[in-house]
Amino acid sequence: MLKMKCPVCAGEVPRTLLRSKNFRCPICKEPLRVREFSPLLGIPLAACSYSLTFVIAQQMGLRGYGLLIVTIFIGCGASFLVAAVMGGLLGWVFCLPVPLQRDPGPGFDDGGILHIESPPRPPKSP
Image 1 (cartoon, one colour):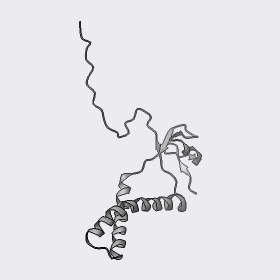
Image 2: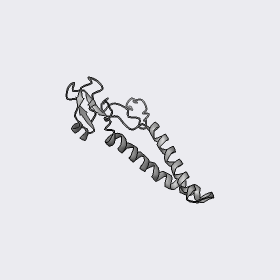
Image 3: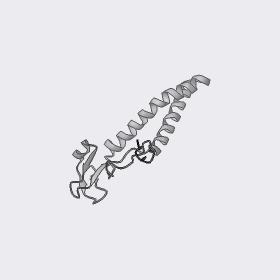
Image 4: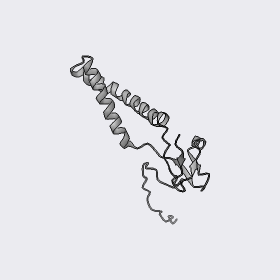
């Protein structure tokens, strides 16, 4: 099994620390977290699952709107199945380590909705 390494000091990080969302490196004490899933990986997985669903449904004899409906609805579920199989292969069979990244802390913008606030106004006089 490949070892997880700290991106800061390249020290070995035990897998037991993955139970919490944020944790510290046991060597350099840098705050770390597991890198989030990239949406760019979802596009090829979805294309693979929809293509696979289309070919299987067409070979079963579906044509026209039936083929379209089955491809859309079954393909959505098949994309989760393909993602689970690929994740299982990468994580369990090939034992690839979980990618880690530095945790920027609570003040970091995580890509959520930005809020624009008006500047502070002076108090009204009576």
